[in-house]
Length: 158
Image 1 (cartoon, helix red, strand yellow):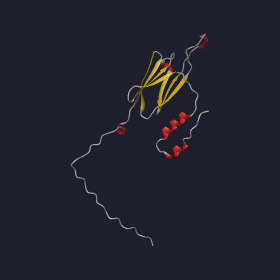
Image 2: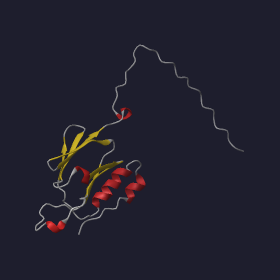
Image 3: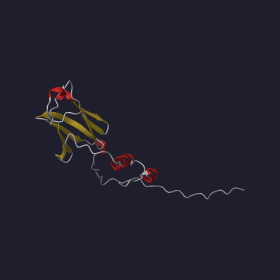
Image 4: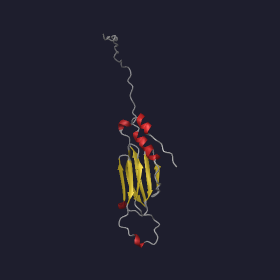
């Protein structure tokens, strides 16, 4: 029996971390393990990633790759396949849907199918306003003097 974590106290006391807490909550839920189709996730560079899925028997028209906000969905559905002719079916052809949770600012750059391998290239692209920038420090320029005013005593109510 697995341990279930309650993240409710963290939701009450943190602001702006809701996506991370939702991801932790989803990861802690026990779901049946579906290992088909098999896939690899590789880090190709500092901000570049690649998902490779073995989808033998599926054509390009039978596969769908969709990105909605921070979710990448890959699905496959065979069309017009007649199972009556097979005496043995060792190459799985069942429909599938695989979901990948993406971090903020990760976008799908390319998807290709070659030799039964679906390759999806991803890139994290931070907007310019989020990238670190260097602030120039000015020298030799006198700043205006800050004037201080004496605080007036508070008037007492009668």
